[in-house]
Length: 518
Figure 1 (cartoon, rainbow, N blue to C red):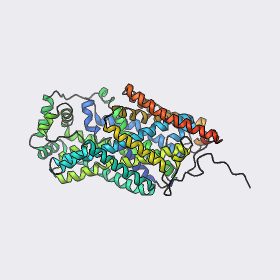
Figure 2 (cartoon, rainbow, N blue to C red):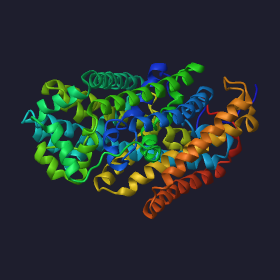
Figure 3 (spheres, one colour):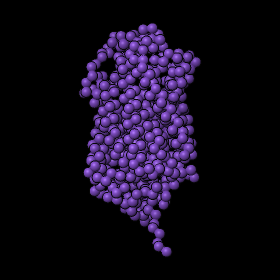
Figure 4 (cartoon, rainbow, N blue to C red):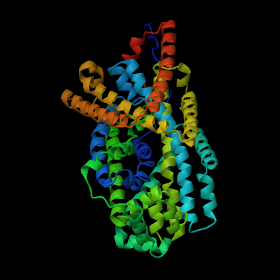
C-alpha cells in the first residue's frame, strides 16, 4: 500500500459546508459595506467638511474601490478558502506577515461587531424618538434604547441572537441574511426615489407639515444667525472627506473571509463581488444626490445647529435628534405610521451587519487556526459546519467592543481604521508578485496574463497604502500604543503556537507551500 501523506493542516478537510451562491455573496458584501456608511455620515459631513461635495466624494471613492474589489474577487475565485485576504498574503509574502495582517483585521472586525451592535440600538432608539415626537408614547421607548444601559443591553441581546444563529450553521444563516439585506435595500432605494420625486419644494413643504409651519426656513435662518455660512464647492474640501467615505465602502474584504463556504462557481465569485460593490456605489450616489437635491441648505444648516447650537435647534424642533437619512425620511413623509415602519426596516442595515461581520470574523480566525498559526482548538467545527471556538472568541471581542464604545474611548475608532486597511496594501503587494513567486497559485487564476494580474495587484497596493497613510494622519499616541499592544498580543499567541508546531515535528514550510483543503 502507498504510504499516506502526513496531515500538515489541523485535519484533511475544513469541515465547512459550501452553501453560498452568487446572491449570498452579494448579500454579504452589501450587508457589511452599507451599514451606517450612508445613513449617518452622508448628512453629518457638511459640518466636518464644509465645501465638500458629498455625492462627489462617494463617486471618487467608488472609482478607487471597485478595481480593488475586482482584484479581491479574482483572488477569492482562485482561492475560495476561509480567511480571505490572509490566504494569499501568507502563501506569497510570508506566513508571519500574513498573520500580522490577518490578526489586525480580526481585531478590527471583532471590535466593529460590538460598535455596530451598540449603534444598532442607537439607530432604533433614534427612530423611536423621531416618531415619538409625532406619536407620543413611542418617545419613551426611544429614550430607553438611547440610554447607555439600554443601548448596552440591547446590543448584548442582538449579539446573543447573532451568536446562536451562526452556531446553527451557514445554511440557517444565509436565509436570514438574504431577508434582512434585501428588504432594507428596497426601502433605501424607494426613499431615494421619493426624495427625487418630491424635489426641493416638496421637501420644504413636507417638513413644515410634519414639524410645524416655517420650520424649514427657520432652521436655515437660525443657522446663519449662529455663524453658519454656505460654503461653495471645492475639490480641496472634498478630498479630505474621503477618509470617512473610504471607510463607508469598506467591508467587502470581510465577505472574502467566507470563501471556504462559497460554492465552486469559477468567475461567478469575482462577478458577484464586482456586482455587489457596484450596486452599493449606485445606492450611495442615488441616496446622497437625491437627499442633497431635495433638502439643499437645510442639511448643512441642521447639522450645524445640532453640533454648535443644539438649544436653538431644540426650540425649533422639540426633541431634535442627530441628522440621518431616517430623520430626513421621517421629516418628509406626512404619515407618521408609514415613516415609523420604514425607519424600523432601515434599522435592519446595522443589524444585518452584525450577523455577517460575525460570520466573516469567525472564519478569519478559523482559517489562521487551520493553518496552525493559532491554537488548533480554534479551528474546531460543530456538526452543522460552524466553527465553534472561533465564533465564541469573536463574540468575546465584540462584547469588549460594546463596553469600550460605551465609555467613549476615542482610541477605539482610530485603531478600527488603521487595523482595517493594514491588510489592504499587504494583499495588493502579494497579488503584485504572485505570478512570479507562486506559479502554482497563478495557474488557478482565471486571468492568464501575468502582467494584468500583477498590474491590478500594484493598483491594490497603491490604493491600500494610500488608505493606510490617510488613516495614519488621524492617529494619536494613544491610538498608536493601543495598535501596538493589540499586535503584540497576537504575536505572542503566534509565537506560542509555532513553538508547539516545532515540538510536534510539523514542517511549517509545508503548510504555507500548500493551499488549505476546501
